[in-house]
Length: 101
Image 1: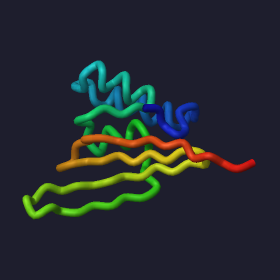
Image 2: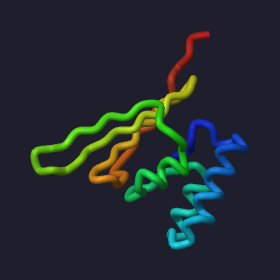
Image 3: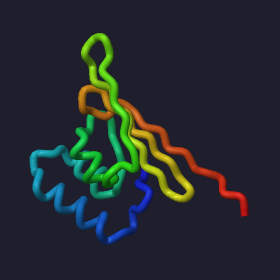
Image 4: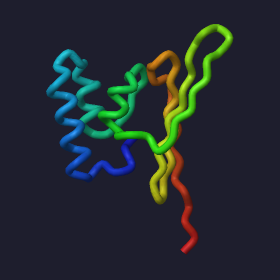
């Protein structure tokens, strides 16, 4: 899954800085962050490094005490929803938005 603005210099700098500051990350995590991708199990900080700040967030605590969050990234032609449970990515959905021309 790619990020909404993968080509930006600011995004590339943010991703590279995070990876260099966190040498303990698995190589697959480093690669995904550098490319602006997601993978299950990523932390909030890893998602911020990969995709940037979300456009919107929502959170709720289940009766079991599990914290469930959704982060939304909205661009002109794409919406990404990232789902977390207890601070770790458990899934995401990426939708292209059809624009009438």
